[in-house]
Image (cartoon, rainbow, N blue to C red; front, top):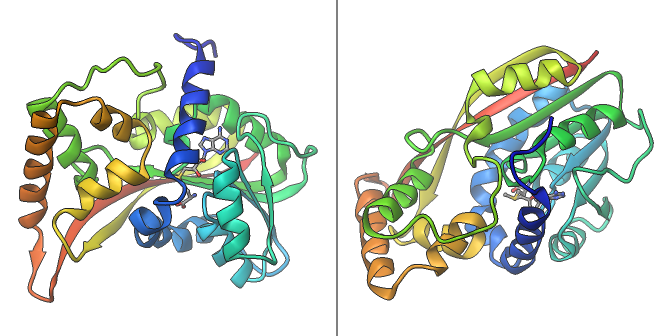
Length: 275
Ligand SMILES: C[S@@+](CC[C@H](N)C(=O)[O-])C[C@H]1O[C@@H](n2cnc3c(N)ncnc32)[C@H](O)[C@@H]1O
C-alpha cells in the first residue's frame, strides 16, 4: 500500500527519539508493558524450543520472559541504545540491531513473531507485518500489542487531552501513521487478513499503571516516549505547567487506598497464523 506521506523522516525521527529515551524507558514503562508479555506469548503458544523473534524488543522484557519459558529467542530493535540495555539485562539471549520494516533474517526462520507496543512507532506498519510473515514458517504465529484508544489507555488520554486543551498539538513533527491506528479491531483484522494471515483474534488486555506519585504519568511520557514527548518539548513553559497540572489532577482520581494510583491502560492484543 502506498503511504500518503514520505515515511523516511518519521522513521529517522523515531529512531533518534528511542536513542534518547532508552535510558529512561525501563523505569518509565517497564512494569507496565511487561504486564502484556504473558498474554502476548500465550497468543503464539510460546513453549520450550519454539523459535521466537521479539521485534522492537526495547530492553528485552518479552524476550526475557520467552526465554524463561524455554523458547529459543532472538530480540531485534533499531535503537543501538535499547539493544545495549537488552544485552545487559539478558546476556544469554541473542539481540540484533535491525529494522522491523526490513528484517535481517531469512524466510521461514521462526515459529513465532511478537511485537509488544512497537507497531504504533513504525513509519510503515504494513511493511513490518509483511516482514513478520516472510520470516515465519507456514502455520507460524504472529502477535502484537498496541495501546487502546485514549479513553481506554487513560494515562495517554490524560496527556493527549491536556495538550489539546492547554497547549498546541500541531508542532510540525514529521508526519507518521496515526498513533492509535491499530487500537481498533476494525483496523487490525483486514490488515492482517490482506497480509496473508488467518485465524485472526483481536482481544482487549486490562493493564493497570500502578504509580506511587501522581506526577509519574507526565514524567514517563515526557522522558520515556518519543512522539508525545516531542510535542511536549515544543510547548511554552506556561502550557507545560498547565498540562502537567492537568495530568496530575487526572491521575489523582485513580487513588486506591493501598498507597498507589492505579490508572487503567487497556491494550489491544492482535494475533494470527501465517497461511
Ligand atoms: C514502546 S517501545 C517497546 C519496547 C518493548 N517491546 C516493551 O515491551 O516495552 C518501542 C520500541 O520499538 C523500537 N522500534 C521502533 N521502530 C522500530 C523499527 N522500525 N525497527 C525496530 N525497532 C523499532 C524502539 O526502538 C523501541 O525500543
